[in-house]
Length: 88
Image 1: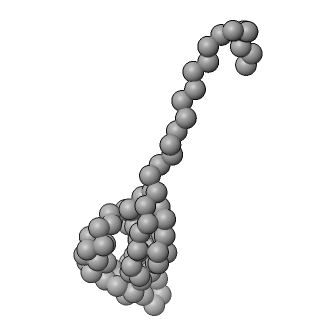
Image 2: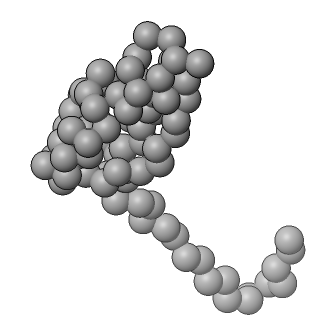
């Protein structure tokens, strides 16, 4: 857009979201109840839980997680889990 000469322009600049260093535990192959306790112990927040059938992972056991385990820099403390419903 064009601005007429000698007009004031106001600009708002975002500082972005606050990024924090987090240690994400490995929750894979843990029962959902245990994973939930560990998430709380680490000061994290349980995010979305998605359930899917799995041929070898028993029911109510964590198959995968996001973010992956390890030290990360993130603006969110949420940990999302993929949990087994057992075999088909």
